[in-house]
Image (tube, rainbow, N blue to C red; front, side, top):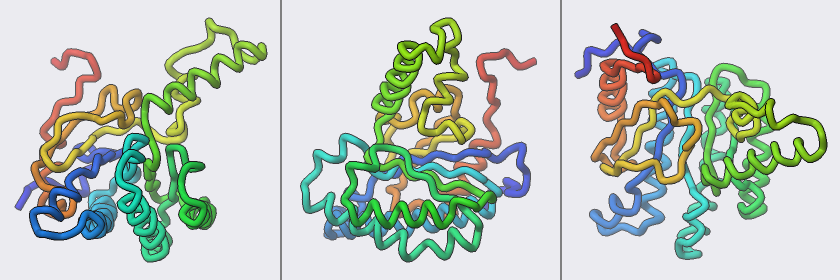
Length: 243
């Protein structure tokens, strides 16, 4: 067991972001379909939300479906979207219980109408919650997000609403889809991968990165505790030299 104190805010991230990887490989090892792997991955999401409550982590951002994932087989995409709808239906009471606001980043307009409607209803229902924020990245790509911010700023310059000299890191942040969120303190990636895969590239500038070999469906209490313990040992310099 870890000796990390989950009530110590100094050693716990305020904003945790996770690249959930390995559902397919987890299923293949067990002779199951990829859809069954994604379903097991959904259970890991529930465990993670519960652990965020235990460790008093207010912001959780999950990379659920990238813009590149549209290249996957249509049957897998359909199953994923159905699972997403089922997850929202089943877990809405948990969002209510913990007063967690649901937020979606990405090209939500590309999602199937039925899925989009369920998400919009859950977003509206949880809009007034202020104890936590669950952000789900769907049809999301960070380069696409940054490109959109640049276009919005350029349009404001053309319209005379903004001067080029006034564009700063702060104004760019304000035009990202995560403008109302603090930058992530810790990014976890499962299944042993060591890359960001076009996830929160701007926001992750000073985030700590933690990779676990566990496939996402196997990411449970022990894996979460190990990540928190490792984070508590890190010295976050933000480019400075610590004395």
